[in-house]
Length: 487
Image (tube, rainbow, N blue to C red; front, side, top):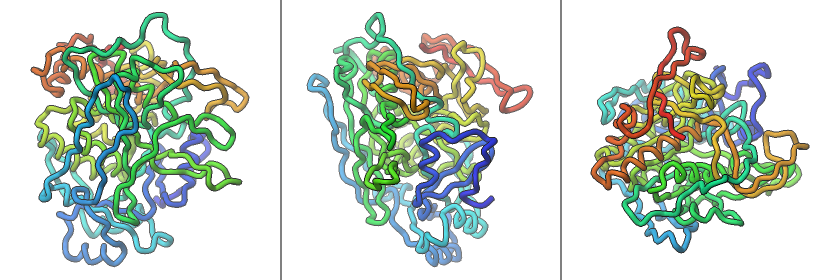
C-alpha cells in the first residue's frame, strides 16, 4: 500500500483535526480500513544494535544520523505554572546512564525527503534489515522492526472525531466535584496530555494540586529538544474552539475527583504546529505530537506513581513502537514496579493494536458505553487491552467558552462555564489511573502502583469488577475484558 493513499469517503468523514494534520507537508501517512498511520516525512527510528554492516551502509546512503534517545541534548524541564498554595517542588528529570540501552534507539533524517518518505524507506530497508526479538520485563516477547518511521500521533487520533466527539457544555455540579487537597499521604499522577488551562473564574481546588510543566519536541534539523507551548483557548480560522483545547484540564479534574489524595503534574504536549488559515500562514495550532516526544516525556518525568498517557496511535504494519518499548523497559527496570503506566486504547472502532496501550507493561484501557454493558461505539477493543471502564458521557472540569466548537455545526453556539461532558477512551484511562493512585495513597506507600493495579483487576481494590464481552470487532465468541466500575 502506498503512503498518502486517498481515504475513501465511505469510510466516514475525517475530523477537522485529522484532515488538517494529514495535509501537513512534513508528514506522510498510510491508510487502512481500521486506522491511519501518520509519520514524519523525513525521520526514521533505528535500532542500532540490530543493524548489519550492509544495512548500515545502505542506511547511511539515504539518511543522516541525528542522535540517540539517551544522549541527544535536552534542556531541563521547566515549570509553566503552579498554584502558590500547591507547595510542590519540581522533581528532577530522569537522566539515562551513558551506557543505557536507550543509546541503541537512534533518530535518522532522510537526505532527500522530497523523493523519499519515512514510510516507504522503512518498508524497503526492513526487507534488508529484518527483525529483532526482545523480552519485556514481564516476560513477554516482542518482535521489533530494525527500522521504523517516526510516528506522529494526534491526541487520541480518530477519523470520526477527536477525541471521539466534541465536548458538550454541562451544568456546574450540585456538590463539590473536587475535595480540597489533603495534608495526609498522597500519590502523584503525571499526566501526559495537551497541558492545563488556568481558568477565570478558577477551578480552585483543582488548581491547588496541579503543577504544569513544558513538554519538549525534537528539532531533528538542529539535533536538540525544544520546549512546547502551553495549552490555551486556541481557535481555528473560523473562530471555533479547536478540538484539543482543555483536553488535559478535563483529565486533571477527572483524576482529582476520583482520587482526592493525589498531586498532579501535567506535561503539556502540543508541539507540532499546523497552518490553520489559508490567507494567513502565520496562524498555526499545535495539533499533533511525535512518538519520540511522548516517550521522551514519559522517561523524563518517571519519578511518579502513575503516568497517565493521553495518546493512542497505530504503527506501520502493526510492529511495536520502538521508542516506547525502550523507554518503558528503562522505567520499569529503574523503578522496579513503582510506577504504573496507563494509556487509552484509542477511538477508531478498531481491533488492531494501538500504542503505547498495547505494550505488555502498560495498562491499556478500552471504553464501555454509559450503561457499562458493552463496548462504547467509538472504542478500540481487543485482547491487547487490559481492562475497560466507562468513557462515554464523562463529566469533568473544562474551560470557559462562548462560541462554536470544532466538529460541531458552525451555527451551534455553545456556552461552557467550566464544565463539560466528553466521549473517548481518553476519559476512560484516567479513571483507572486515579483508582490506582487512590489505592497507593490509602496504603501510605506500602503498596506499589503495580500491586495496586493487580488488586483492582482482581476486585480487591474497593472497585466492583465484572466482565464485559464485545464480539462486534473481534468476532464470535468475542473478547472479554474486566470492567472496572469507576465513577
